[in-house]
Length: 516
Image 1: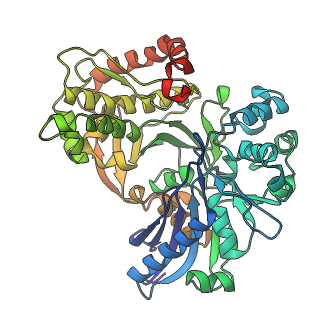
Image 2: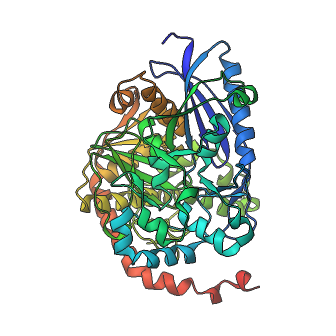
Image 3: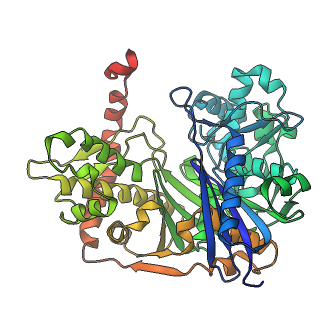
């Protein structure tokens, strides 16, 4: 492939669409992002107009091509936010706004679906995953129950990136990683679970054909070529859901590595050579973007969002001081945290500000500072928040280890990976090297381009392609490792001790604003 040709990776995110050009050496030639908004019509709801994805994709593609005029595109790879419900009628018209991954309206439907299959153990036997409210399956049943007129016209269900595929190629299709996040997919067999679909009362015909992630799933149509400014006939490869495909973008596709993603939420993920049973369904076990690999991850709902909360909290005191620390940049926050010591002088932060998903599936879990004394200051509190986020990820790894998963290196990604200080805390808490790679910073779009390159034969397999992810930085465990081992032991004892208290505090009687 000549230097003026490239793979186009497109990622349909929650806040915007990113397009990326990647050459055969694994070098990012250009990127461009177009933003859009989500809506919350009711508390706990999260929706988006699918047409915003298309408008965003068109702008992102135009923008990235303008930065590298004359570049020849040889294939397109797709990534996107997982679990979203995009309901279509027979003519492929959108029936209602898409219901997104972070929408919580369908908890009752998820419980009903689990019971209909025969309970949690029966569901895990079929899909190896719980039916979480974020997943697509419960959203379909919610729509049937609460929007029957629109549901009667429902003929097709797609996830966000697959709706873009439809608009690019005219094909109704998905691939195994995104299908794994619907709650309707047998990840062991890499196929739709007939038993779960039928028990839920869902017509199997609404589900799209499912490919392996590296398969060519369609080609750019004539109308799409005109609309998006792309050559007609370009192959569009299956791609992957963002939480899964971004691991290959960080170089993780073979067992032995962990990936941490510290964004608003925190994700700990690894690759598996074979599907492992998922005890109690507390982890998420999905198909990976390579046909002989699986993906295991746990999601902590509070990571970078916990630090953002602390900064927002401080804004209320900004008028009391000349220079409130809530206004300082991210790197200065890290400097303030570094003024404390490992373990924040005996202060522990539980980051459960929005409940928790893994390793404790508990919407009533609450955040807390434990160990506060009059000698603690802002540096200790900032550092304890950073440490608490990493302890939450380490807690997920303890659950993974119970299933036999072992790893000896972390590849860090997400906004939190930009901090050398925060990466060092990861190295000390996990007791292993933490590295960053070039592709990890680009997220799902980079992974989509990698997978597309494998799909059109640019690289022979996913492991070879993952090797393109060059190391940028490395942190090794320091002398603070022992302090963190003791602090983590204390951290793990706190949730079990406080679980009943959290439940009592979640009583609506304490939420006066909600009562009003």
